[in-house]
Structure formats: C-alpha cells, structure tokens
Image 1 (cartoon, rainbow, N blue to C red):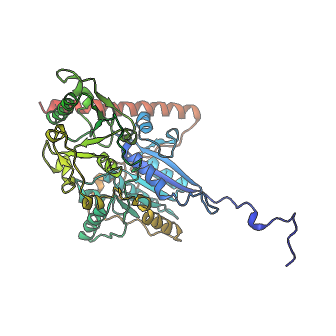
Image 2 (spheres, rainbow, N blue to C red):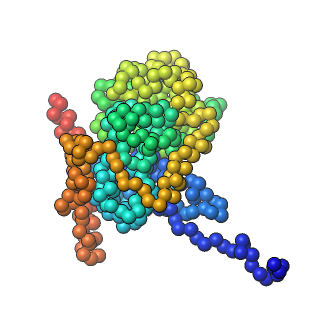
Image 3 (cartoon, one colour):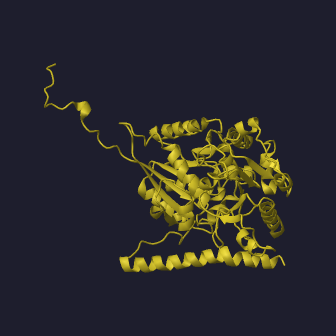
Length: 462
C-alpha cells in the first residue's frame, strides 16, 4: 500500500455521519411525576447521549396529561433542572397523546402516571397496532406504601417497571408471580432525583425543615397539630431556623389533593408565627443544601435527605399507621416524636434498612441505573418488539378495566370513544379561537376540581 501523502485525508479523521436521534416521550400527570419521568428518561439514556464518537443524540419531549393535577408553569419551574425546557412542554389529552405517539415515531415512552393512567395508555398504545412500537417504561415516584397490588397490576404490561430499591423489586415480583403474571419487567433502579453534596455541618447554622405532604395527614385537627408543634419547636429554640417546606401554593395541586393547605392554617394559628419560623417553596434539593435536620411524616424527601446523610426524623405523634405511610419506616431507626426532637434527639438510621431502600448513601448510586439502561438498549436493538400484554384485559377484568379506560375516553378495546378525538384544525384563525376556548375550559375545569369541589366535600361533612 503506497504511503499516504500529506494532502490525503485519513478516513478515520473524516467527520462521522450524524446518527439519528433517539426520540423519547415523557407523559406525566403531576409536578412530582413530571420530575420523576423527565429525570428517569435522562438516566435511562445517559450512555446513549455520551460524548464519545458513537454518541447518539437524544431528544426528549415533555407531555402533560390534562387533569386536576396538571402542573402550572410555576410548579414546572420549581421541580428543578430536568434537562427539558418548560416552554417546550405541552398539555395533551390521552387521545392526543396516542395520536402523537402514532405520528412522531418515538423510540421510548416513559409513563409517569397514576396506575389507572398507565393501564389506559398501555391499552391505547396496543390498539394503535404500530409497525414498530416504542419501548414502554413506568414506575413509582417514591415510597410505595399503599395499594401495592392495585398499582402494580395497573402498571403490568410495560416493558420495564422500575423499582426504586431492592426491597421494592422483591415485593413487585412477588405480586406479579402471585397472580400468575410475567414479572420479568420488574427492574431494580433507584429514585432518579437523588443527588447533592453529602451533609456537612456549618458553624453557626442550625436549620430544621419540616417536609409537608399534600394529603398526609388528611384531617384539619392532625394538620393543625403538626403545625402547632413545629411552631412551638421554633419558640423553644429561638436561635434555630425552622422552615416549613411546602409543595404547592393554595389553588395548585400536586400528585395528591391538598384540601387544607398549611398556609391557610398558619394564618389562623393563635399567637402568630415566631420570627425564626418561615414557609418556603422551591426545589427540595436546594432546601436540603441548608438543612441540619429533616422532619416529616412519610415524605419521599426523607429518602433524599438520607441519601445525603442529613439527620432525618419520621414522626410517630399521630401513630405509626398505614394511612400515614410512616409504617414504611419501621426498622429504619428514624421513628421519633416531637417531644424527643424538642429535647435535642436526632435519630440514627439503621444501616441494614438503608441498604435495602435504594438511597445509595454508600456511593453506589452511580451504577443504580446500569441494569435498566442495558434493558432499554436490548429492547431497542430488537428487530420487533412483542405486542403489549397487560394483565388486565376485557376477559380477565371485565368489571374493572372498561371503567378505567372510559375515564380516558377509550373504549374497552383501547380505541378512542366517539367524539374523543379532536378534529383537524380548519385554519389558523379558527384554530386559534378553538385553542382560546380550550384554555378557558381548562381553567374552569381546574377551578372546579381544585377550589369548588373541596368546598362541597367539606360542606357534605358538616
């Protein structure tokens, strides 16, 4: 072979042909599920989008399922950095989402929805009968402490059902195998939003943060009690900064309905609020950056805190009960009361319990998604994916499944019900008018479910 002259290009030096982008869609129905879904999509495609020569660009589309908990722009901004511009996220109905998947040709779809929404989308996607369907991924935002069987069976049929810990993976497989369903989709990973610097005390800083939850506890008496104890803790420790970390502002909704916002309860608290007590919003990770003790009833924020080795307390004041979710922390070493916290007690987590919970305080978090990533890559490499096969069908659950699908305007076979699909826009002007009417209808709907309905429910309890 003759030597290459200086003006001859080496084929190895030639710019590589741009590779086709991996297209991912995230469908979410609340602010916290949007955060989970978007970050999960990033975790699952991190190696595909690497900076090597063979890197493949990744395009992630954000879709919000229209409903009572559809996040506002403020909530989207507050969930933190997820790698997707909030301005590029759009709101869709279930049928619009299915049409989008049909038309856009996504490679991966992350369903960050409540169980019924996942089940409806699985049947709707199956009914599309796509020549090449996307890989379907779903899972849970945080601690799974209620409706384990119901939620899991509604998620069955996805290619990958992510479990946030070894403990959850074992329980998930047991449920599927116990009803004779295929459990191979269950894949151990971790919460995608864990991160931040390990806890480091700062001289002169003493901050206690109570992580509030929208629906736990539910009653006015219990929520007022927790607020009163938090305020009393601030008065007992005037040099300590005491923060009440809130998920949403009055009128907004998160994954769960909040009918009794702490903001309103605080306004009616006798004696007012001490100067070292504040209500705060924002990204949980940023609040944890200045936290010396996190207190909660059962919030997933406890796992974020434990991941960073921040002292963490789970309250027993209202009992250790399944409706509160704090029964999940039995054996953790974290259960304590306000009386003990007032006296200076800081719980110490049990290492064995931590090891099974996926918080990865031992530094193993970097590899937590390796198995899931490999599974996605293997499925994408398949010539043809098998048809979606959820456990629930019109044959196995004829008295349950049709109602779930109907809530998303789908027939029992997964096809859109008559009138569910929006007709093509006839023109720009009429299209703009129609969108204006739709926006007004959305606002009226949200006002009804977020403001009027809770009032009616409370009146019915009188």
